[in-house]
Image 1 (spheres, rainbow, N blue to C red):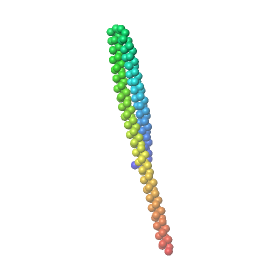
Image 2 (cartoon, helix red, strand yellow):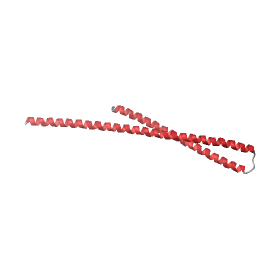
Image 3 (tube, helix red, strand yellow):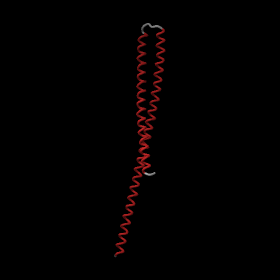
Image 4 (cartoon, rainbow, N blue to C red):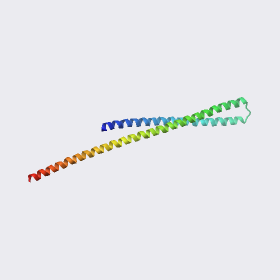
Length: 148
């Protein structure tokens, strides 16, 4: 592969890495928001249960108890659903983090390959220059010995 091809590959890998970093940032924000909402719903459910526990110490009607149970069940479902949303958001964040890690590895590997190719090219140039210098010295030596 030519150096320009490798440079293009590196640019593309860096762009993919940058996109993966943005994806991780978005996934992290979504996961944090989902966890926060789950925590708020859980806190609200606890407050709701405490308030109604205090209310039940006084006399109340069966209709009110039925409303409490119905709303409590819906609140439990909402907490459970939000828990699943938070879990899925955490999984997306984990996958995004892994995608970023893989993209960073590709960028590092390409940079290492480019550096190795540049070092090999520099060594080849150095060997060529050394051979040319050796040939020049050998010819100069032959001319001096021929002149004697």
